[in-house]
Image 1 (cartoon, rainbow, N blue to C red):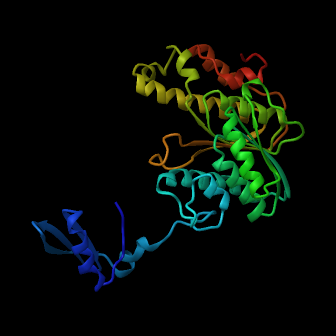
Image 2 (tube, rainbow, N blue to C red; image 1 turned 30 degrees about the vertical axis):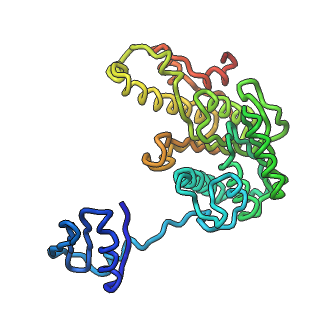
Image 3 (cartoon, rainbow, N blue to C red; image 1 turned 180 degrees about the vertical axis):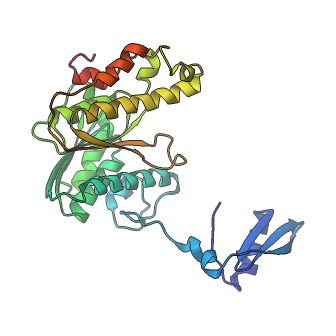
Length: 327
């Protein structure tokens, strides 16, 4: 489905051009709606009244304003395959373009009130690093913040390519390492923010635990593939009805996983927002945990999480990592 505004003189030609593609075309004008229906090679039309005003008809002219606009000269995104050489979004990459823009918006919202001029960020499971490059570009080039961003991934060829692209464009504060985050991280020093975009299953938990242990001020995490609780949960109470059917159980366990993660972060001094990251049509993995540290860690109270774990028999990696007993 699409919308396009046409002048009176453009309309007849456009309808004829589309005759081979569509069996019916509906044209909404101020005060009337005209429907063109294909009959053989000819279009017949019918009209009916409507209450649209001229202003309402042209209401779809509004263009979505992204922080990083299509057409903006970001050469790294050409090399990474998101933009064409003319800096237009490739059709197959539009969903990814929306995701990384939305992620940058969430970071921008969180940092809007800060006076920080220097940031260190870690991207866990960075993959091809569309997001990593975009965040670096936005912070350094558009916001003028001195940023150091470190990306971790398991694939050596991907890491080598990302380092080559970073060097090509002089992104001195951007570096990538081959690293299994479940076995620790080589990064030393303080960390201001941790981000993950679709770090699979318990990799998200290791990223969140790293953020807590390093005292990161900000966490931006879009989890995916939350299988762990699904594999260990058993009936035990009021939620048993949600565990009966596989599809519902899978979705319930994914939500339970992220609810547990949010609760564990809150008990360790973070204010946590659980956001719809992007529209479900662009990605079914569309929950973001956005956290900001608002107070020092004291004595965390995990009693509510522990009660659920005992009743339903499940295990959860972030809880284990924070309590020093994860596998």
